[in-house]
Image (cartoon, rainbow, N blue to C red):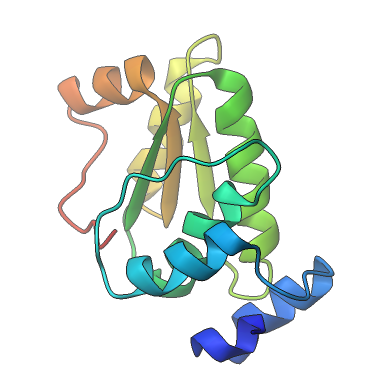
Length: 147
């Protein structure tokens, strides 16, 4: 099985090719088709098995860059993981011209608010505390979430 067998767009396949990904891992073979269908999953696998790409690939594929607003929200427990996941999503979506916003504590809140007000964020990756803060203050709008 190859990534092209999932029926992914040519822009997205170009992004995967640029990352030199050739064949999906076992967790990716199981997860990608399910998430592309819109199913919710809880996945557990060892470190280094490709979990981030397993959900990142369908997230990036399903998001439409021309639609303003947050279409995907990914919650992570730590700042380090937020940065790691964001970088992976940016790399995967390189040729789709997506905007990924990373939100976490310890970074100026106003700058994150300014980015959210612009409405250009297709995907938001954030820590639970900062996401809750921005939701409670009314800056994080999730009415356009598709995934």
